[in-house]
Image (cartoon, rainbow, N blue to C red; front, side):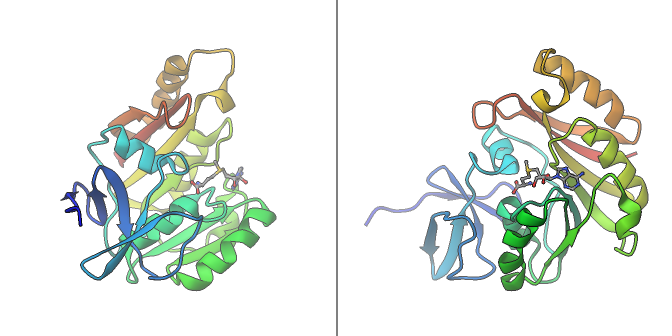
Length: 222
Ligand SMILES: C[S@@+](CC[C@H](N)C(=O)[O-])C[C@H]1O[C@@H](n2cnc3c(N)ncnc32)[C@H](O)[C@@H]1O
């Protein structure tokens, strides 16, 4: 048997033989066909950097990742739950993810995931209209991955409404959905200016080659 080399950089995330994993909150259940392994009688799910942007950011040597046990998260563009299932593993049963999604079809695919993981609350709504879900509580972190032109403005608007003082945010910027004619580096620079109205940028990485022309910002509320 070969010995598994393990490392931990951020709470709730694990590197085994240079591959990223989270500890499965629901052992025996997979979400998107990801590989699982057992280490010392615990089950870990591989966090695929080609399917999930925060995982890609970690492979690109991100230094700040402000998600930990018990956190409350507002997730804009939760889709069918690929990334949120790993956030769900990290925050554990004491945490909660309010997952906003505009597409009924994606949300339908999220329902069985949320059925297994009681810390994910699926909400069918438009992230451009946070008043539609004004009932949710204050959160520790807002994550945005809606891949639309005005998503930095959407993140700021939602954070003004729901993010607690000192709270954090993360956003994956797809340069091509903002401006196909500009160089991605130019797009990131412009988006940074919008984000800096409300946040300090505490980390930034590009996600190539895992996600082409994507930038990933980690932010702290001013
Ligand atoms: C890139 S996908 C998200 C992938 C997901 N974050 C993951 O990693 O598992 C973008 C999602 O944002 C959703 N979306 C687009 N515009 C939206 C809006 N205005 N409000 C809420 N969701 C939106 C899309 O339907 C799509 O499911």
